[in-house]
Length: 82
Image (cartoon, rainbow, N blue to C red; front, side, top):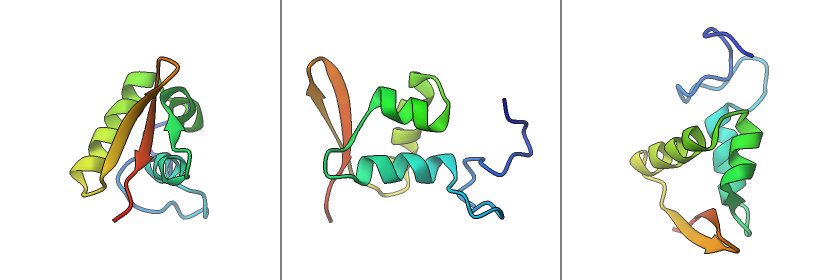
């Protein structure tokens, strides 16, 4: 478990160690041509599924257009092209 001073916070600032922030990881997954399943997003960020869905909401609030579709009962999130 990471502490509050971790370099992977959701502040939008890039961590000094060159790794992607959790929100950048989520954005990278939904940017793929196949998008990202809620379970994939949660696993990549080491979050619970509700937190991953909240991150998608925050990306939308920051101006990203995210489309949600259903595939075999699971939600798939994909960044809409501009």
